[in-house]
Amino acid sequence: MDKKLQARAPIYEALLEMREKRIVPFDVPGHKRGKGNKPLTEFLGEKCMSTDVNSMKPLDNLCQPKSVIKEAEDVAADAFGCKKAFFMVGGTTSCVQAMILFYCKKGDKIIMPRNVHRSSINALVLCGAKPVYVNPQTHTGLGISLGMSVADVERAILQNPDAKAVLVNNPTYYGVCSDIKKITETAHAHGMAVLADEAHGAHFYFGENLPLPAMAAGADMAAVSMHKSGGSLTQSSFLLVGDGVNQNYMRQIINLTQTTSASYLLLSSLDISRRNLALNGGEIFRSVCRLSEYARDEINKIGDYYAFSKEITDGDSIYDFDVTKLSINVDGLGLAGIEVCDILRDDYEIQVEFGDLSNVLAYISVGDRERDIERLVSAFLDIRRRYKRPRSDCKKYEYIPPDVVCSPQEAFYGKKRRVALAEGIGGICGEFVMCYPPGIPVIAPGERLTGDIIEYISLAKSKGCLLTGPEDADVEKINILEE
Ligand SMILES: Cc1ncc(COP(=O)(O)O)c(C=O)c1O
Image (tube, rainbow, N blue to C red; front, side, top):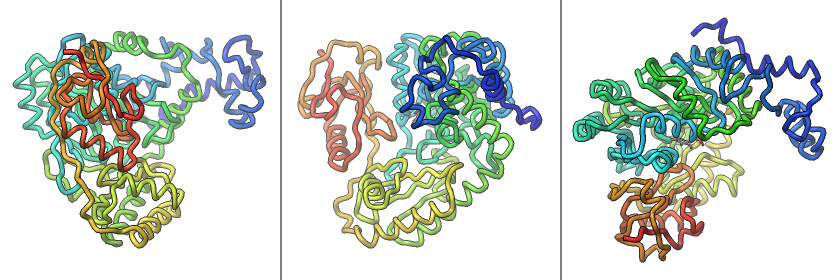
């Protein structure tokens, strides 16, 4: 990484210059630097509104960068150690979809773990490719799904030599990493590309002693949520690509779904955040790791909680663990993770990332302070004192292997009928059902609905999980394919 280059932030610099010039706007956005919308300007501030501008020659254009955005992309590529970094304003969802649409067309196969985020399967709805799922291993004690074992990936590759690519979560939401280097070597040896979903791994590129980032592992592409662990504004992400990827074709793919009015708030936030991490990332993530380790130790001392870390690694499906993720198993309390999550918010004004049936995930990142961590630890202590109950009521998450009957696209666009959930057993599902977060489908279009899945959906509902995906927002009814 070239530190002198990293001190630059070309989009931010161009915006500062534009502000100095006091250009009179006869273009969109119609709020005209905030003057036409006083309530919004009072809420967001004049600086913010005057930065909300449209593309113009001095600011370049995200659809076909030639000047400052291109320069900023080059600086970002140097920071991430890749050939090209695309600035993305549609979240990591847009990065994941661009990666898949790049490699897969109708009827193509792609190998992926079943615990992918919905954005991956959504991409299959769009392009008509078929998933070959590798069952992620499950940690029965913790009730979480893990990474992919190299042997399982290799088997999937050998059984599907015509697959175009392998997609890897690096890491999972809980911080679990597969052996991405071995998986990449194996996939490449069979002529397949490797795509990494690094929605939760932006910090791997800037910290020390963290799991291996995808581009360093030799992956072909990575979708990186700068807005999650990297500190930029919500919705801003980087799509990284390596050697040998046709960048101009990738630009065309991105432009299929990208807005023609990219927000300069998002673009400048990516530029400034990249600069911050490139210059100060070592120190920042040393502190994040220290805070996270401290919280883990203190929470484990309370009893009945298990804040897990690297000790769960096994050299295979838990090849590595991201210690910044503060994932806490709460089975010992006799409460579901989602219940603890709600108690934290309702009684202690603490919002954690999410809770599932057995665990709570607190996201520790660039913005956390010691006193906030102390507050979190105290809340866990108090919750145990006030809410602990016998464990009998706890049901563990169990991986339910999907029965994929047809492609997500065929199912999504197929002729469907809406039935009561229980009546759908045995039918082919025509839509998604997922708990959000984490946004991993419980069932995806094209998969057979089983009693186990319905039981899981009912349990998640009863514990207060936010279920999304189906046309019926209450998930009382489900769309099943006409057979
Ligand atoms: C693993 C994973 N991939 C992709 C995404 C999509 O990211 P975004 O919300 O930035 O679109 C998420 C979001 O939570 C995620 O958890």
